[in-house]
Amino acid sequence: MRFPQYYFENHFSKFESLLRSLGEECNLKKGYEITSINPNLYLYFTLNGIFKLSLTHEEGAIKTICFHGKNSILPYSLCRPTDNEYKIESDALVLTAITDVLAIRIIPRVFHKAMLENPDFHMAMTDYCIRHSNLFMFESINLSYNTAFIKTCNFLYIYTSYLQGKGIRLTQSEIGEIIGETRLEVARVLKKLRTMGIVSTSRNGIEVLDMDNLINLCSYGCN
Image 1 (cartoon, helix red, strand yellow):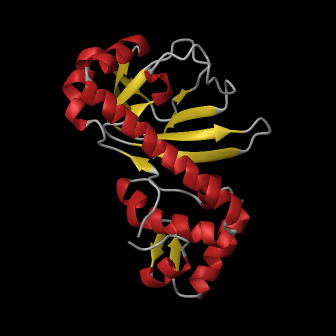
Image 2 (cartoon, rainbow, N blue to C red):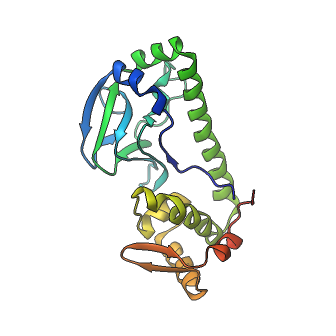
């Protein structure tokens, strides 16, 4: 089964020594936010902990995009100077530490210089950006054409197969933020899936009881 990558980790493990040499360690508490309105913007190479990337609409709606764990780099938009050519609304994109985070903080111009001097690192960064682009393209199709039922099934497969194992626990509202649906719609789908005997839910999370039938309800193609 093919599915989008909502959780990024260990993409830059082989470059840890290089990245440590470019910056300094910093500790970021759970709840710390990184936005483009911060007075001093840095790139962060995560050593431990998890960040959530989300998009905030001017009317207050939130769309969670993905998560970044160990050996990730963010915000990757700072990896090259753009002179604001691709500037997004200042408070639209937000990175939030959902755990305490230990990271290497790197000045953008220092990071960019290292990319130019290290072709392998440059290619790894390019691949990293492409992986995010693939996710964004999937999201455009998923949000535009799939029903709330299919979107929930799609994400439940990824969530229970992978994200929960990484320590990410999401409420029904947070699942709705990712798939572009309300908490009520997610609750309705979960109720139907419980009735079908496909999932069970509790305070500890969501458990898939019948993975084969869940897969059959998803829109993903099989390998």
